[in-house]
Amino acid sequence: MVLKPPIGTAYRTEWNWLGRSMATELTLTGLRSSYERGVQPKDVVEQVYRTIERVGDDGIFIALRDRERVLVDAELLGAFDPNKPLWGVPFAVKDNIDVAGIPTVSYTHLTLPTKI
Image 1 (cartoon, rainbow, N blue to C red):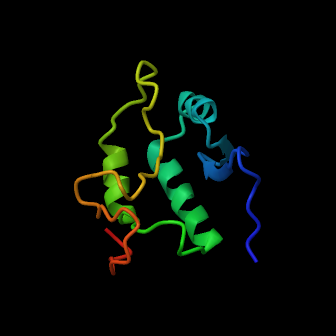
Image 2: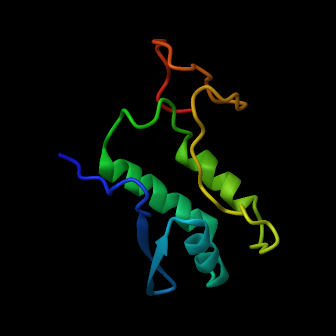
Image 3: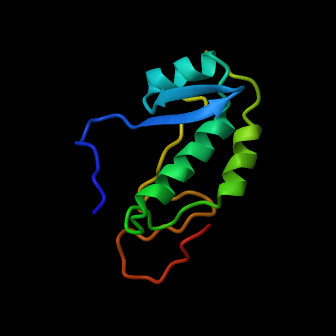
């Protein structure tokens, strides 16, 4: 049985960065604070994917982008820019929103790949 935090509870992530344990709340404020301290988007991406694997619920996502492709996109962000409020924020897209390279299914019973 997987226990999930109540709705509205922010997930916290932890990893080692430059020999120090870093904890980040996955909120806009928490991520911004972490990026200001030097945490890199690729570190957040890795932690998000580890969390997805740890939870182990295949029903959460209809499609999940390949980790390596997301890491490349994270590197392309360049240096932290505090003037871009959504810089480095991981997000999910509902299956009825058209996004290039991701299936738009709108809750149909199609057989879809699990990795994009």
